[in-house]
Length: 280
Image (cartoon, rainbow, N blue to C red; front, side):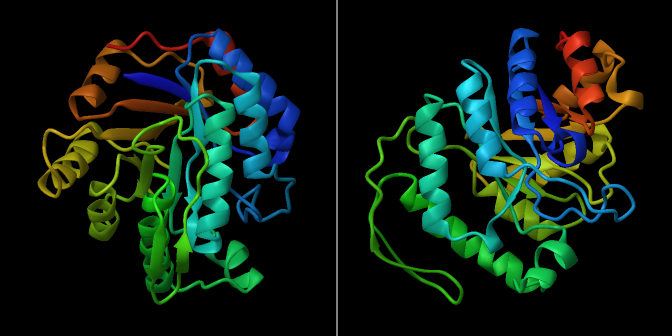
């Protein structure tokens, strides 16, 4: 199993230099990855109060330049409020500067009032899901260096090919945000390279919950194709090392990436000081 720190980019962790320093520390502490949230106007930090937020792509650039080994990315980027070609340009550049270490996280977005409706973006669940599917269809070809001519209800790309050198082939891995009680999110994830399994209340799912999601995905894809399952784990203060038996249970359920929350600089520093769990 791979272990990573998952840092919120609001509040004290909005400082891009600090995020880069923490990613470097995580790499030195043996972690396999350093992931960040993708927010613009979080409504939950704290209790609805405004918060500073580090721009996602600027933060990822700093992290990619500061590290040499670990995988990194945003979990997850709400593609319904992104232009597919612009987003493809950004992630191809990020993957190139990091020599092929980027992982894309994609979803329909959950901060609907602040990050969609308040900004004039489509806020309906069905339309956001449809926009996500169309954006992914275009991205799949754009990130392979193929010419794209795609005309959907929401996304249109005509005779466009990005010739950026590819560091990961056939393209950068894409993980889809998935909810245990939303079959459409699981069916969508089954068509890609992995899923970031996260309940809407940010709670830690049980191994049984993860296993049910895994079984659903396997039933909707070729069983032998590699597929990552990442979960966001949170323990009191995020400092105790998870017990080996706990890690073994989640690994048996199919988890390949264990992401530990860091909501504050102090939490992130604590995880780095504590070090990467040893696994099962």
